[in-house]
Length: 377
Ligand SMILES: Cc1ncc(COP(=O)(O)O)c(C=O)c1O
Image (cartoon, rainbow, N blue to C red; front, side, top):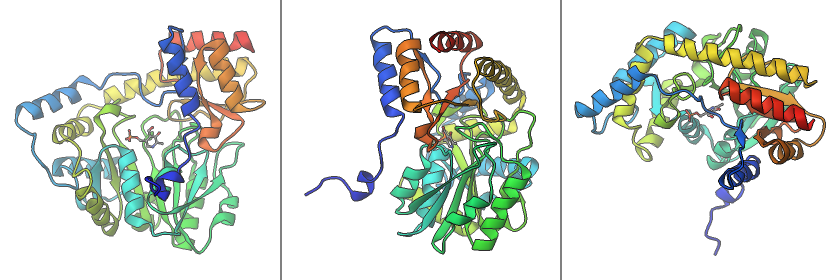
């Protein structure tokens, strides 16, 4: 008898694993590998957030909380969504989970039946497709327009009577592109006309440069059919805290809470108090990190352009998405072997012919990486 489930066997190994493992081995051998394949801010969590968590621990906030998440945190999230995203969100319509990734899986578990199709807009973050498969759904892919990574009518060609959900991410990992108002309006129309749930992953919302972030849930009747995903990892440099949240219509958050009750229960109580401090505290720390990312972004995209590379519009997140001539896996391998620079092949995101470079690294490191890539060109 096969020990593993069909569900898990159908999930392909990540295209990033080969490169990541190789980079790790090379580092272990003492090679000076620069890792620009990371998806996390290189800053420490701001001190006032850490202190709030320590204080919570000292005060004995170490017990079970409501499985939907600490009420004070859901209240703070509700205020934030109203203030910043024009989304009216009752705390009962919010679920706090162990990272946005956890929220995404819960949303799929809550909504999908076998055979339900989930339309994913590519280039797409690596975990959407596995989340769909693990929840028993069927992933269907459609690429955004590769000129500017905006949405267009080709998406409609992939909509069928079985399409249950549309998944997209703005600002985008891996492209750094930000969906403009026309794109979000088109997605809204597609969802409304075809009775589709939108899953809008807005985790990079705070890392945006001279562009406007639009939450689809604030448009038309989308409040009734949108699962908005967000979290603390990227905006507040809290990746290891494992704290994310979702807002959705009550019917869906109740179902997501059911999933949570029987799996994680809820995120660590004291981490959630850190989340309260993050949302209610001074936001200067977020702006300072954003400005530093912006400085690096300008440097990196400029340097890549000087080397003759075309990049996707780097308007958000902390990635430069670079068009390459040839096989992106092979080129990444070559960069790693010859230049000792680790980047992520676009194939991992369903976008062959592109490479993702993270600029969540210090300026000196970025300059050295550019020098090395230029040298082997
Ligand atoms: C687009 C996107 N969504 C969600 C996540 C998950 O974030 P979290 O750390 O909150 O689970 C990531 C993390 O890399 C991401 O890039």
